Image (cartoon, rainbow, N blue to C red):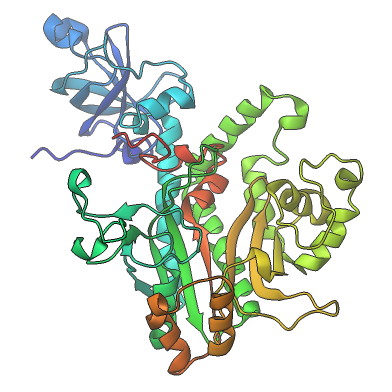
Length: 482
């Protein structure tokens, strides 16, 4: 096998007059002489200069946009603008042809909508090279953060019989024959004849299983795929996405908030330190996009400014009740500029309210705590009723600029009597979660955790505006292509 050099390394090299071999894909071929070659190691191309007089016409015709080639030659100092080095080729080999009449990625600007239709090829563009390099860095940083703090990485089940969120929007897993489905005497599907002998689904969260492990290891985290059968076509929803969910014992809501804030700052800093080229490119891309929008629709911050905003500020912490008071008396609410007006305690906050608190009122990331129990999940620890007799739970949401909620979590309800009463009130069958309740029967302890949708994090750090552009092959209603 011929030893090849990465373009990323050669662009920084000063080892002139040495022979090098590069392999990559042709971005452009000008004047039968200049090949812009990219191998995916960086966004930059290296220029390969050929002597067309010494190459057969048949070979020249095959050097087309998208073709994979190998080029060997001398690395020389470039006299042209825009690059410091180039390769004066002595030999060219075509590794894979690309029909220029059919290859959809021509050297011009393509819309993100069009690129979604050819998601198998969009990695070859600078935009998606940058997005997925940042995604890689963020995933690595997540694992590094938890490893440094002694958390154990757990792989929780993808197939489950429980619904952690109680939302019911789950994908069913079955091997039953749809054309000859077995039925019980009352006409319902007889899942006892299914593969698992019961109804099963794709998981919406690894939290409940994560809690079991936390009660043995002390500190664990999950990082895996989750699924929601939510018929939503918004720019913020996917049917398949990845979740980071730490759970740790002997920890209250304060500990939970601190861990979440530390994690967000750590991974953002890691991306800034290790994806400088990619983030500068995405920052310029976002600024260019903003110029095309009306003034009132432009981003509050540039991308790099927004990331620095999250690093340089301590997150503001306040209760849901305090937030409602601020929002009720806010100018957008008083002047009826909010789409969803805040008129009473108990309202579920919308993205516009969350962004107002972050971007206008506090001008820093915000952690909201102590939400009404009625709008939160059954497993959250119940606070004592407030002065007005209202029931809240020890929940927290972390709100970021431009996106609203980034993290949702809580101290978990460790008291068996409180938990079972809450499950009764919500008609959640206790016999199906007997194993979860056992952690409250045998050595219960205060514990906390949260969930971070990984694609939402990538969306925030890259400045992309549609969540379908930060996962390789998006799954959404009526689409499971590739």
